[in-house]
Length: 321
Image 1 (tube, helix red, strand yellow):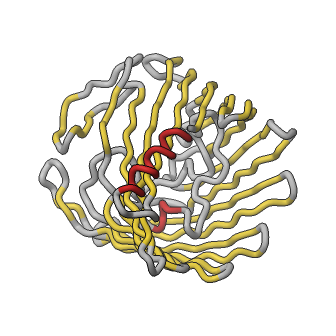
Image 2 (spheres, rainbow, N blue to C red):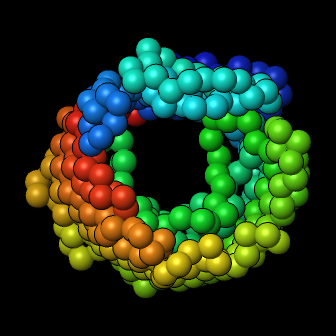
């Protein structure tokens, strides 16, 4: 990683852009996943993710960025996949050897001072984490469940490794402890030719030392209105997050609580509970443990129950590079 970064930076600098930088980063994971009642209840899980980010800065201090992502993972239960803008039949497999979607669409950003503008394949307000910690503290080495487990029906899109049907424009401004953000996702056409509606979102957050509160609101032509309020922070070795929200497609208010406690310099216990949403939903809950081996490598495992009452669990290793 360090050698690649050095060589890339030096190469761009020799092209006459001394402030430019090209970086590669990524992550990997490998383990076992359990899902009660599935065709193959216990299966091998793996994923490799690679992101390239290019940054350059003008003489006046305006920063320009662009990034794309590749990802390859096991081919479990893919159903129908999008490959290069074309829908292909990909019948679910119980123990797929591998699946890849290639490079995703590109995202861009321009920033100066406390202002940042994102355009293209980028996160909207609800997905970005600018004002609300959406998932809180998930469980398992894959983070298979978190405090938003019962949250459904939200217009919430983010950066990834796939093609995208719509462009998003998001503006964020930060001044001291205050952060405000607004996003607009343009209407478009799905791969099957159907229309996709536009939607807009707005949010604001404020930090009080180690604690933060935030609120978001959005509206889409057909899907309707949505909102969420969150809080997160820390008291010494204990960190917490809370989330409450609703949208026009849900029967009931959705809520979630999660926490993380450092039991040692390397070990952390996480847990969550989430409820509401559809009238038939069960309350979701789970607990997990993660142990750092250093060098960006972590062993982790978790077990929980989702909104349908299904028991799910995983255990494995994940690493960043």
